[in-house]
Image 1: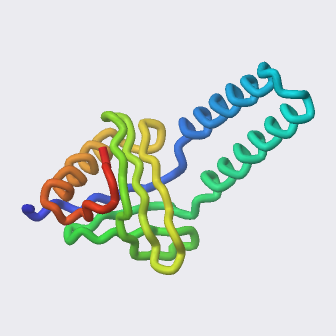
Image 2: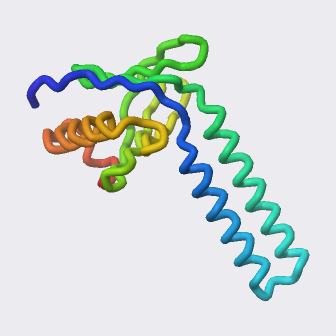
Length: 151
């Protein structure tokens, strides 16, 4: 692979994901209430749906990543809250049409972090450059094949 330029971007959580989760949770709760389940069971399931939505939205809004960078050498670095830099490794990714790129990065000793780059929180040029570079990495075979399908 030829030497690809570094890609850097500031990150903030996507509002689209929150709206989509609210919509799907509302549909799920409606389906439960419209089913033949007894009302105590329907209430318990609807509360569980609401709790799951609340926990997910808290997790996404409390994400500590402020910026990310993919170096020319293939290394990832994340700028966390408090101006702390951390090295990361690309675990997996998904390209969703031309509209979104979902990155899952592993932090040494801290688990994983998922970054959704959508039209409401990133520039179209950044997403295009990421898609192209991810395609180059996959084509070159340097991306582990055991991680499953990526597109």
